[in-house]
Image 1 (cartoon, rainbow, N blue to C red):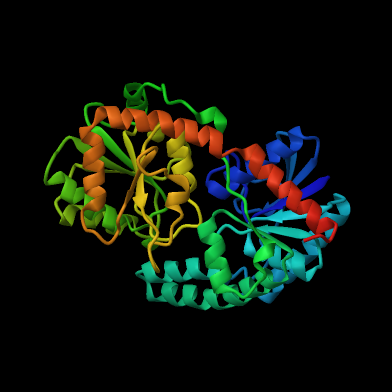
Image 2: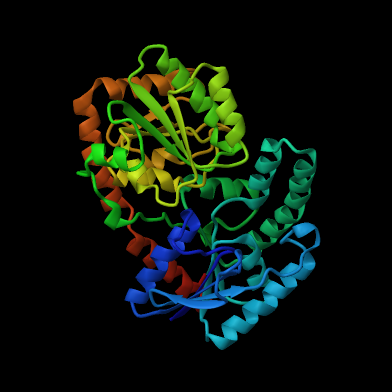
Length: 402
């Protein structure tokens, strides 16, 4: 089968959850003997229009003209539709797998067979950017952008024959948000890089590699620093922990619109020196390997790929339980409470701090969870299974059985 994978960006060496998933899925398909083409935007200067990476053809289309820099405008979507039609014809494509709203919308408008691997609700995520923005102009821009995104999402979810989502939680949210047939929504969880499993890695050398203190307990989180990630809430929980003990540091890997605010907030609550901001890192594996515990304070997630990455390196994870309406997270589908980590109660102040202290005080429990974490990541989350399920959906779309 000839399969087209679509996302707005795809840059070697594959930074970000969506780009990494495209990389791993494409490798699985190539190994199985399928032709794979990736279509994306030429998002950076210096990228080639066409190149081959590990047997996969990458086609990058130009940044089409768009009013107010919005990729939801009529001209951009029209040009994207024309590009898709040409690629389908020239590459003899049977079906497309899309990880981006605009590409899915354009494919459906062109009446091309497509499976939408829904990564997030674009309109909701854009509204979160608006909430977190300090600039009135940016705030207005994001609010304006969310309007066409909402109508595009409604069209796509209604017209697409097969939609895959990352979790039970995301499926329930999708069905609550849009009136669509639940039979066409399929749960396809992502995998994790089996080559990264390395629980036996020397923490001392990993910490030296990324310049983290060797003699401290390392609490880690890796994410984009945006409003919905609740990182200021994590800082408050860490402040509670710091009142009882000073043998741990909190390491935040990532950047985003709240990066400066979080640094200032950490200082304002007396966390000078005990919180380490590492910024954006292309290679996050050394940080996972250096960590004692991975903390996930996010209040809105479709899945949480970083949890899989942390588990695969043997880091017990702590995240919040599903709430109503928040936290809206599938942590309990990933973390086995008491086995690979702990589930905390968002509405009980200090509960995450208490769970961290429980693990820091019990080396045997933490070590047992570390072993269980690697086993769970290896046995439950496989890219080959993810690819197989997507391939089955493709067959149903092509044959009209979906």
